[in-house]
Amino acid sequence: MKTLTNVNVTSFGEAASASRTARQQGSVPAFSGGGSDLLQQLKDGTDNADVIVNLRSVADGRTIQSDGSGFAIGGLVTLTELAEDPSVMTGMSAIAQAAASVGTPQIRNVGTLAGNVTQRPWCWYYRNGFNCFKAGGDECFSLNGENGQHAIFGGGPSFIVHPSDVAPALVAFDAIFQVTGPTGSREVSAEEFFVLPATDPARENSLNEDELLTGVRIPSVSANTVSTYYKVMDREAWTHAEVGVATVIQRDGNAAQNAKVVLAGVAPIPWRVRAVEDFLAGKQINAAVAREAGEIGIEDALPLSKNAHKLPMTSAAIEAAVLSLAAG
Image 1 (cartoon, rainbow, N blue to C red):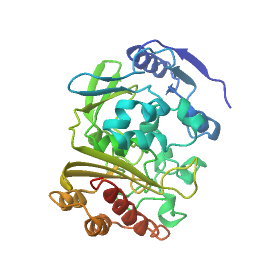
Image 2: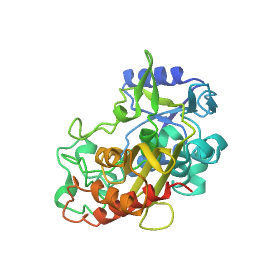
Image 3: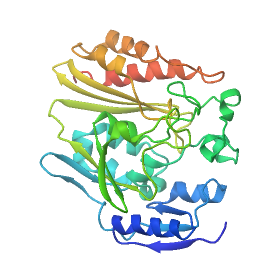
């Protein structure tokens, strides 16, 4: 590895300013909260940062609080803290379950909410030095290559899948993302935060240079809300979702008043399945309804040459997630 310069900061504003200063001086900055993915990219050479803006001394962004109008979750909250927080486990189960499904306990102990949401794709072409769209090139090698783990929704010209488990759950809860840059702070909805390759194949989110995700606000969750995150993996631990389903339902008895269904592991962004949401609204949740929801969920899928196995996986995962939220 090359020589790195470490810059310790004590606030998000200072972090954004330090990043801009480093860039103005001809360096390549990177923010580090937990640093697990960043370290891997530096080792692999897929990140050419030479200045690390260290967030570990930032006091803000490490709490989960209710403010009367919802919950404020700091970007530096670890995945373990998110998974084990009583208020998240009780009122926002899908978020807690998604955080608990990430990697290993060691990774969850250091990995942060913001880091999980903004991590780069784990496509083997990108991670192994191919000059693909994500690396600044003009080709997606997976299109005609090894694409068994790639997108069946929303792909083109890049067919990566977004690797975050937590992001789909945040989208399903209508989260608002808080972003800080050198000129101040702004808010963006979780759904608008993510960027499809058709918009910009080199990016996965709408962060500008020297901006960082500093926190998340979840609007108040009604008492009749139930949620779950259902994940299918190709092995039991330390892997990303083949398919993940974050489902949030406001329930009247055993009927769904409304629903949010957001997929992981199958698209370049957390993928909302609006056709399933529309279908579930007003329905009594039972086995037949759950099965049909699963079938509807893959109607618009466009598998590549080697990832059609994700179709029955996705259908079954939606079915299982919806049925698990039936009354009782």
